[in-house]
Image (cartoon, rainbow, N blue to C red; front, side, top):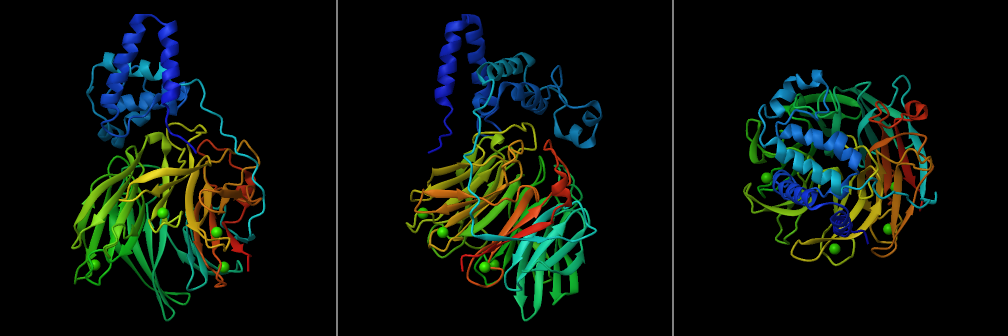
Length: 510
Ligand SMILES: [Ca+2]
Ligand SMILES: [Ca+2]
Ligand SMILES: [Ca+2]
Ligand SMILES: [Ca+2]
């Protein structure tokens, strides 16, 4: 079992420095530790020095954190043109919020205790024997692939892809043939099918705006597209001027027979999670709001067994945590903090499934966003299962190291009645040529999971995934979206840019 506890390492290092250093630095380090625990825990879980190597603390994370305290010199890492940017000047205090000598003590604490190197992440070779046939989805004249959202339209047997570069929304059939192309703009972050009745299909799209990089801009929106067959009948805004919406969900949480709409506006330093209810004049009005940034995933489930769907929200920006919103009806929710993670975890996805068959919903969680301040391989990035021990108390019960993990979805892909896990990684160990960015963890009785993969690492860099029975044969199929537009420190492979926009992994167990 994986343990997050950094204590043994810290104790060892503490002992080492007690022996090798004088009393003066000892007192100083202790002072720095105390200050760090006070200050760094005010915005997020206290980050233990062992989470990152010394050079990353020194050159990247500490200078950026100093900016949050209004300490601009002498260790700022930003370029002068960025410091004069409008968002920057609004983002950081202009005058220091703590004495510089205190910041220096915090800095010394981190640099003294942190390891030279993190534990190496070396996955075992994973066999290539998943039960999937690979069907590439490619649209000519639209490269490099920059797919930001995929959807398995199970009822219409279509796969929807949103491509940022070509500003297109494409539909393919299960054999990989292009069926429909619609105009899009910006970067679609989520595609959702709201209705599919009698040949009329309504899609809801969340769109983060023009950049997938973090900004404080409010050019995101949610829109609906109504289609009859392949013809677009109607297109309408649901909400605009949103701060980078990346998650959305419809459900009747109030119990009045009408669906509400939940939108996670990820934002940057500002953002919110908001539930809207539909009024008679077709306007969506705020019903409930958490005015905090970073919502990356939303799921709904009855956690209290009272017939009311509760909401699980994953926040992934600095203060990373999973929050359970207990539904009391009428738009009233109680906020329970279930799990929290340090900022370097880079939380990416959430799913709910009962892994151990005790009737209690468990949590599948991934972390591995590695684009921001510390782009190094991290031994704690990967796929986690937190079992529900009763009373909605969750304990880590399984960990599979999968650097750069971006999404995991639970489902019975193997047909043995037990939920398996399909997962993708966007920040794989690409220096290791074997990494395909995809893994299937076959459940042979929890927590006995057997990993396998496919030789698809040369075909694309997988950023999004969806699961459903596309061909209606009773087995779960998968679609993976390829995003090969920018590198983020990862060398872009020409084969990714020439590769398919997406892959259908067609389940062949039947
Ligand atoms: Ca309702
Ligand atoms: Ca369970
Ligand atoms: Ca299974
Ligand atoms: Ca199938």
